[in-house]
Amino acid sequence: MKKFDVGDQRTELSMHNVVAILPCRGRKEQTQECVRRLLATTNIPHDTNWKLVLVGGYNDEDVVTSIAKQFNVYGLVEKESTLTYWNALQRATDDYEGSHYAILANDLLPAINWLPQAMNKLMNTFPDGNGLVGFNGDGHGDNHSCHFIISKELLLQFGGWPVWYQHNFGDTEFCLRAQEVGRYVKAPYAILFHNHPWISAHDDDEVYQHGRSMFRMDESLFHKRRLNQWKS
Image (cartoon, rainbow, N blue to C red; front, top):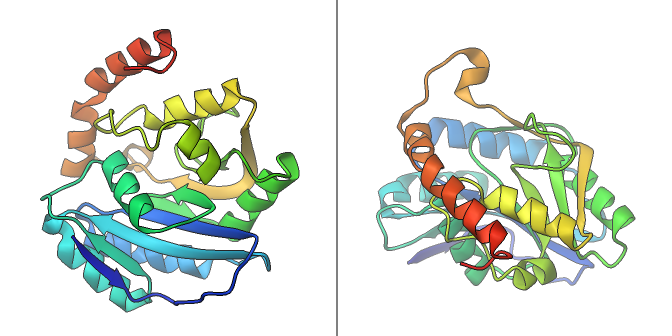
């Protein structure tokens, strides 16, 4: 594992410490633009510190390290050639302590104030900060969010990130479980537009194709886990 802590090393305490995790696989130019826009559109609430962590396997070392250095953010390269989305989140969470974790992707188009809008919605709904707040812009309704912020407390309650899935349905499981315990809300103005190729009538690239190839397997596991009260 290689860890590149080139970001701002602030140590002051704040009420919230958000670790935003961006798993990386290919798409270097797209990832650069996503990171640039994530940083440009984030206005930080006064009681929130945040850091952006890029994470990937060694096949994506160049993507992670070069972009982390270019934008003065954090990078983490693991010894595996590639990581699943959920494994990437878990590795970053193991290395970077936070009160809350935001899950991102390199196919997002962030709108202004995406982070404070989400954190404000979370805190206004759950004053203790314990919950899951979904970003808007994924085409789903109120009860599902592809990308979200989750409190460390709730993440631990769920047993960590859903690494049992290959790619799909981890977000579906977490949103449902958060609703079951009364700890889910979606933030309508915290917008991370999920810019899938089909929206503009483009074909999937190899990263999308690989993820979709795991859909039926992940779907079957999701239904089994749901029937078994989220146990494997």
